[in-house]
Figure 1 (cartoon, rainbow, N blue to C red):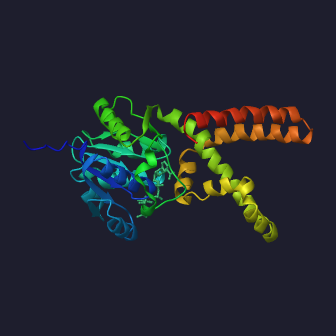
Figure 2: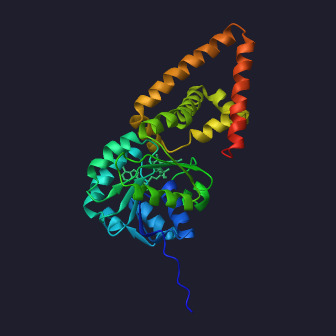
Figure 3: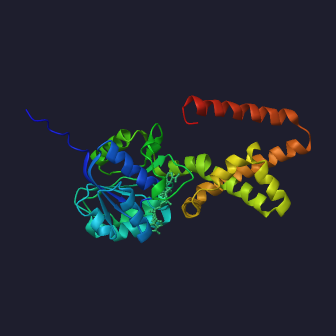
Length: 298
Ligand code: NAP
């Protein structure tokens, strides 16, 4: 009797972009045998060369059309602002029945930019892994990135349900916990949980940089006292984050407005020595941290 190897979930996975997320997807897809063939393309010759050296792809392509040809799963792993142009370039080469998804941190803008280019018979299912680090590029990826992390799908109303189910199974096999939600709701939730915290980190680190040289040296020296965590977040990829703020403008501005009001209340409490107000807030926020730890998201 001969053993018959189980069929991979997808025959050919095409990854467009090979940074942190794209290379992590290649690693996990290979480890878990989620695809029979992993084709990778990226914009720059330097990244293509590095992908070939790292060996996590079965084929490396300079042309996007060559990467997606014959693929039954295509994942856009490029900055949010690049998704529209990438979708336009790959559209004529997509195989009938293929599933196209993305990993962009904003969903309404990606749907706006990508969906018009998707040919009939190809299924676009937008997605966003709630997993990441401050590192970027093909060397930064690792198979465990998605393990135990959330993955949000924002299916397009009236879209193909079987495609959503297959994509859900792919992400679950990669270790993620999948949630479905409406794209507008996603953008609001992420504005407060991810985008605003990054904006605050960029601001604090930027303010420190603007201080005169002597203070700056001490900022680095004593960074363990809280500032360090902000510097880690503020080291995130500048292009990726530029695109997130430009493409989730309304939700971020709404959350920023609320944040500014709350900050003004704190400022007032400090000015008037209202310790009970400060203690009350800090007690409530401490409980949130305990919730995050209990949910294993720390
Ligand atoms: P990354 O490490 O900086 O890699 C970006 C990739 O996109 C590279 O392959 C780069 O190609 C390519 N690229 C950049 N600009 C492009 C353009 N204008 N046209 C075509 N390709 C372009 O980024 P990442 O962290 O993997 O992020 C990719 C996506 O995942 C983003 O949409 C981001 O919002 C989302 N995301 C990121 C995180 C995170 O923590 N990093 C978490 C969740 C979701 P070259 O290297 O060849 O130039």
